Amino acid sequence: MNATPNLSSAQHLKEEISRLKKEKNALIMAHYYQRDEIQEIADFIGDSLALARRAARTDADVIVMCGVNFMGETAKILCPDKVVLIPDTEAGCSLADSCDPVEFENFVKQHPDHTVISYVNTSAAVKALTDIVVTSGNARKIVEQLPQDEKIIFGPDRNLGEYINSVTGRSMLLWNGACHVHDRFSLEKIAEMKKAHPRAKVLVHPECRRPLQLIADKVGSTAALLDFAAVDDAPEYIVVTESGILFEMRKKCPGKVFLPAPADDAECQCNECDFMKLNTLRKVYEALRDGKPEVQVDPAIAAKAIRPIERMLEMSE
Ligand code: 13P
Ligand code: SF4
Image 1 (spheres, protein in one colour):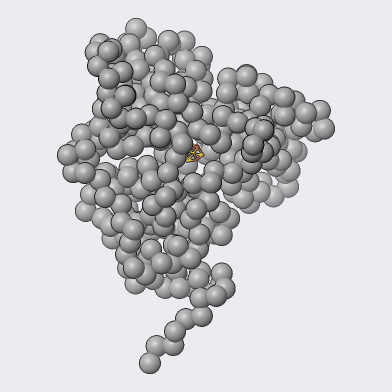
Image 2 (image 1 turned 90 degrees about the vertical axis):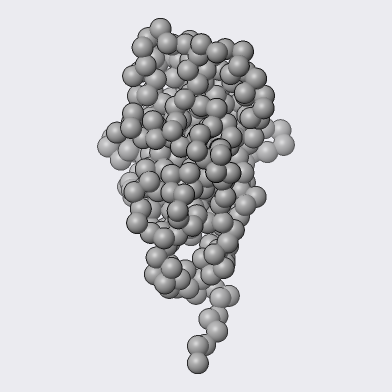
């Protein structure tokens, strides 16, 4: 007779997740902003680009996407025959929400001679209106492959768009969207930290505002910031992005000090993404056990959204 597992402790949850994973031939993927304990049990941890790439080549039957909804949707669009589970369907994204598909379609229609580039942090419906999807890890490389005089719409993140305009010399038309986490870091707070830690280098995600990009020692996607810290010789870093990344940074660079930058908002000093942190070990366990919640994408939308995602993967090889 099977004993009922004691699931009151994190250790037991981890053991059950490991057992179910084998039983169901599942792959657990996690973004760097996930809780530490989820990064610990994941088979693969990555930035948005790496997660999409890994999903595209998996032979698992089930993908458990520990991230937010648009990451689950991207995996489902790339792997329509697989079961894609997301531990909490409330894990949305303020940046994706800042781009309503109907309003975006009107914007696109007003500029019919423009190529439409969308950040992966968008709904499947917005991707379906897009020519090429990008992530913060490949946006520059992809834009640079287009002719210098090509007219481009870039959405929805205006901070990333400004950054790409500045490094490529383009003047892409920008959608006015932002991520609530990255948009609340301020120059003033980072300057205060820099005063207290003069030897620290400043690592900035391009979803942060332009003044922060300008004072950064490195601007890059989560994976690019990690790679920079791993080869750079500074002893300390001020990390201006979601604080979940510190788990992997400290693991990769045990001798270095990583200081999370505080947000600068009258209501919230928090540098965590509340959507990303909705996923817990228990929810991962329950998703694997029950085979739900399963990500579903309207097949008509998925049929249009697959091409710009594939173009991204081709152009960033
Ligand atoms: P990257 O994983 O591309 O760095 O994006 C960060 C982010 O905000 C994901 O939601
Ligand atoms: Fe979206 Fe920002 Fe959270 Fe990333 S950190 S999932 S962009 S709200």
